[in-house]
Image (cartoon, rainbow, N blue to C red; front, side, top):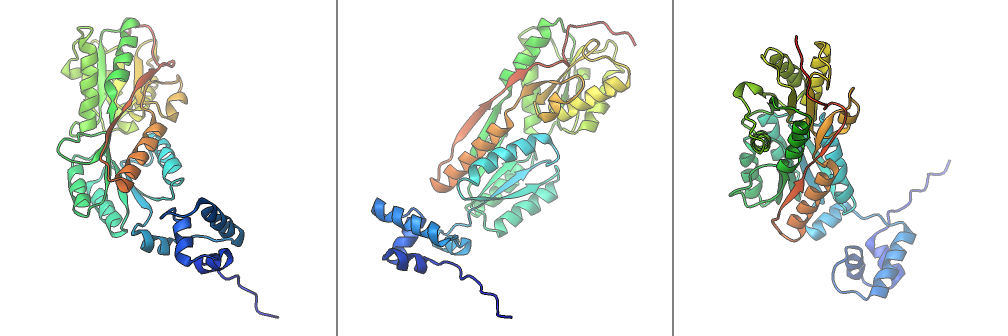
Length: 344
């Protein structure tokens, strides 16, 4: 048997020979650099496609001094919120020729720290940080010491000198409170995330401000500290059911905890929304799949992914540091209803 013929990889030199131009001209055309006659550039691109040219990523990195990789650091990959965010990030970065290194910290500082070090070792072109750790500044300082562009999501940016995307919780949470007040509710409870997280404090602050507009106080025993996971929502409902009188409306700081509230209420024989109304926050895919479907404050996840991706590209390619905002709003489903009277 004869030896199988192996097709030689097409090089810039092959394209240059076919096009009758220099190798540097081909490189400029393929990398959209320099000033080249548009007809010449078009002809080179067509020849490259005809010959079956695939760019050499290592050569491209040497030429541009970039790796075309972005680090994306998230708190909990199992949370449906992040799956939608990642879809948005990918839609922009892959189209722009970048690959993504995804790091899941699971709310663990040591894991987050090792992830950031790994991204630095991989020489990524930029990092998007979407964790909720109070130690985020350590990661930011570490990346800045290596001159790596950064985008931060949903945290105080004062004094950090980086790009960021912030969330306006006030609008959506205010709509939720107004909706519940119009249904006759006056006794509210709230499930926070870990209180040391800035995002937990921002959501609680927005809730209190919304209640103040109706002169409704939020008693301390109506606030339960969760951890953004479903089990803590179940624990919160068991706690609220010990209170006399019971709150008639509960808002959770994310959908996972709201689902936990819902599950435990049903387990305890509480009817939703006839006895207690429940509102989530994020409006992830699970909000529409619960029984009853969950009323939730929409934090537009795919839009967030698109926006942070656009910010990191501008930070890398134009060295711009921009702070932008995303707005929230209420999506009403069947977990909220007219205020009832429950006796258990």
